[in-house]
Image: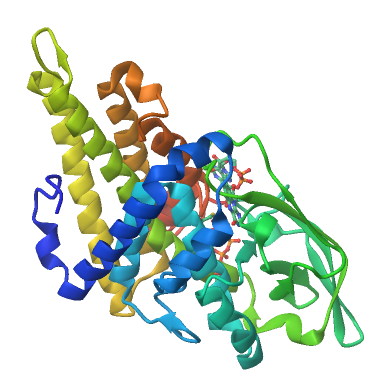
Amino acid sequence: MTPLDLLDIDASLSEEERQIRAVVRRLVTDRVRPHVAGWYEDGQVPARELAREFGKLGLLGMHLTGYGCAGSSAVAYGLACLELEAGDSGVRSLVSVQGSLAMYAIWRFGSEEQKQRWLPAMAAGEAIGCFGLTEPDHGSDPGSMATRARRDGDDWILNGSKLWITNAPIADVGVIWARTDEGVRGFAVPMDTPGVTAREIRHKMSLRASLTGEIALDDVRLPADARLPEAIGLKAPLGCLTEARHGIVWGALGAARDCLETALEYATTRTQFGRPLAGFQLTQAKLADMAVEWNKGMLLALHLGRLADAGSLRPHQVSVGKLNNVREALAIARQCRTILGANGVSGEYPVMRHANNLESVLTYEGTSEIHQLVIGQRLTGVSAFA
Ligand code: TGC
Ligand code: FAD
């Protein structure tokens, strides 16, 4: 499918996986690529419209079963993330936060009533979800969260704030994590509940085609049944992160592929010193090294995806994939930018947009340092977090 597939990794995919990938690639070509540079420049994205279109194709919560979800394999979901992120990391984020964080939390930890209420509408893209874990003073260390939920009779009262929350400005439901007297718990909060306000974060220099917000929770009164009954302790939100991180392992390679394909095309058509840039050994060395890293990343993603489909994927293994593939994708984007010379900094080409986006991807869903520490703890048996 792409000249970058030096190892013929495509041959390891099933016919169904290839078909799903082709459908998502066409959607991105038709619906995202023609507009995304403008969305990025304007810091706006028609997220609701896109969500409905993604919903029609069954992309939202596609790896979940029942409640209008497609029940696809983890590998098919990964390939969809890759194709979406080849368009833009922000577009992939819209889908990951909806499906792997908000929907997954309700699907995995919610009551039957909560599932019936939210999941079919979210799968269709009619309702948008967000996932509020990060706070102004607690990012990498969500276990120290300050947002509190206390009992008042049968009701719950929530107070606190969440920061950097994807989709928050337009969300219909927020999966909000809060500390209670019994430990961390999750709540499905209708975003129009009195006391909930969402403010958009402007002036981001990265992920500009994605809506990010701050959520303030001011004496928010919720009925008892707003709590996700099966979400007990910090391991519940961290379990959701494992789902979303797996999508990012694949997605980052989509951004890298788009950069590499752009650089390859540019290098073969742009001439300096009487020959195409691709004819210089230094350019070829860059392209070869990047293609090798991209292929290694694909093997890693496919391996993790197959483990997920076998039901044996472990969180530290996802950390290996997130750390490596995002780090390498960012290095590839930056290197491709050099091949495009001055055009590399222009919004006429996607490369700098991808590089800027990948700065966020490196930080969210666990920073590189956090994933290094997860792997370090696994290797040594010693926790170096605190
Ligand atoms: P720790 O004591 O290690 O763990 C508490 C409990 O959780 C379990 N656990 C996990 N379970 C499932 N998946 C994981 N990845 C897990 N990691 C840990 C653990 O076994 C334990 O279970 P139990 O039964 O013993 O209670 O917790 P800690 O407080 O020491 O924290 C560990 C650390 C630092 C790895 C964790 O806090 C962490 O991952 N921090 C990073 C925070 C983060 O990634 N935030 C992301 C917010 S969402 C987001 O960024 C969305 S971006 C938009 C997009 O996705 O597109
Ligand atoms: P900090 O935790 O303050 O870290 C700052 C630096 O210190 C980092 O380099 C970090 O690696 C390092 N550091 C921290 N602790 C250690 C340690 N123990 N050892 C070594 N180094 C350490 N969150 C959500 O909950 N939901 C969302 O939908 C969401 N969407 C996001 C969208 C965007 C565009 C961005 C940028 C972020 C989003 N986030 C979201 C937040 C994201 O998950 C956090 O930014 C991330 O977890 C890091 O937290 P922090 O920014 O507070 O950095």
